[in-house]
Image (cartoon, rainbow over all chains, first blue to last red):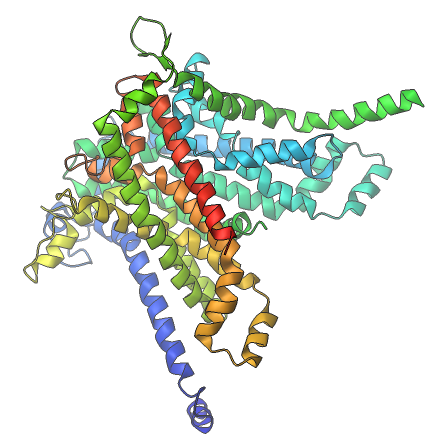
Length: 289
Length: 293
């Protein structure tokens, strides 16, 4: 009431603005709901019996059922979903640790040490961000073949450490840590490895968390890598397993969607726990001068 | 004097020990494959056959230029990029501008919702949208049927790629939204205040303050989207398997089939390099275009 009266008092330009704002916000909300709806549908539809999926009768299931999940769990011979889940957890966790270790060491050297030629080294590393990963697929496949790593988790884990994104991100963060702290530690007799481990890393927890969660979700969702580098069904990661098994159950969407739910839940949990870091990560990557 | 300067230089170079682990992996899995791929593109080599690799010069590239399937795949890819990049970044810009006008915590909440689909694995997203689009039991056609319509979203060669683009818009718009919104936050408030004193309306502010200030971030979002779009694979592989009539078989899928189904490594590597060249030239062109007014 009060607000309305106030607007009334100051007509002209300002009088219409609240309505515009409400309209704008309504549009934004409508758009957001439209984008989220398909994600919600995955979950709702996975609990529908097949008949309701094939013949759409409404968004909510009329008869909630675990049948689709049971069908997967009873079929673990053919659809080893727990094996895939384990593979995905193992690979994504190791990739995350591997990338954090390599990238933080390298970024520390590049950002904090007085290395000869480090500017050139940094430029070369950052320039590789422009190389689309897909063009390396054939040669990396052959190198992995030569090293005997194809069709093992290592085919995905080891090469993941080569990406430049993390080095770049941590480099920018390390630059912002005050020099005095490091000098004080050096006077106390800390060598550089101890400074890195006991000073720089603890101070960089937010940046490390951001990079870590980013790498984890990226490797969890990776599709082309596991598709090409892994061969046996037992070695598949969850996304590739789910995508490939559904080709033999082409029309059984309930089954595919139940598998999709299992594939999506870990990512959603990670997102809910760490969403601030995720958003920050993209922001940082985009806002380099 | 001399001893100490040698000592110092050892001390300085020894810092490279921190870089060693990363550089080793970088060398073997990024630098080496980059040039190895270039070398491979100049040989003829069927991985499974007994005959050793043979140097053939530019023949793989010439073969690509005369290969109707290569052109078809390139055309499918270009169609995808030309539709996807402007649509996604344009929509993201509108959404980011809208979000920016909303103050307080609700802005963060909405941003999160727009970002959510980006986190879904392409397998899951692909399975879901195949069910949406399919003609027989598809969700969209079930809904359309109620008003007596039916649209062959992925069964018509003319329509299939557009359907893939629509799905991609849903899946990827969140990334550029977050980047552009952060870019909008960075524009100094004084610019708007100055413009307001000059009597600028909302549209004039958008044209003379917001967009010019946002240009570097917008450029970044465009180039990233362009590079990503040229590598499209998962969507078409899962939803349409390149069909119908190869209308959605994109370059990466053709390379995948050439190298890992038919094991023609040289030809696959050559097409990869052609893809890289196209992406590189377009990225540079885009940078140039946006840099100068």
